[in-house]
Image (cartoon, rainbow, N blue to C red; front, side, top):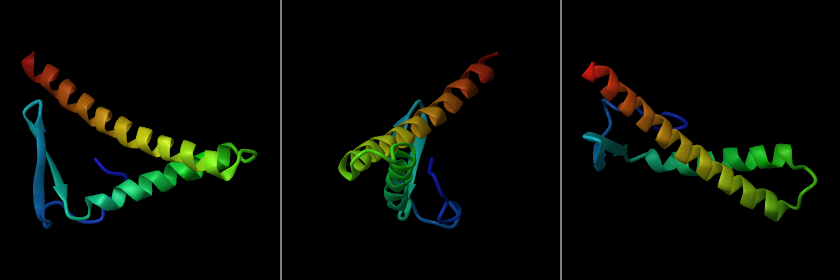
Length: 90
């Protein structure tokens, strides 16, 4: 689960990170590019919505927002997996 796709998964080398709920979570060699991009997106949101705050607090809030973006994206994907399992059981 990424913010942007930098490569096609079929053509890139994949590495298994971990298995959760019987699903393999894979990574490509360009996955790390999403981490700074999500941090930048979080900082941009913090700057837009808190123009009067100091730069240091904007960056800190922005990094927290970027982390929340990554975590919510991960848990959103888990929701898809769990929903799929519930549908298959019926």
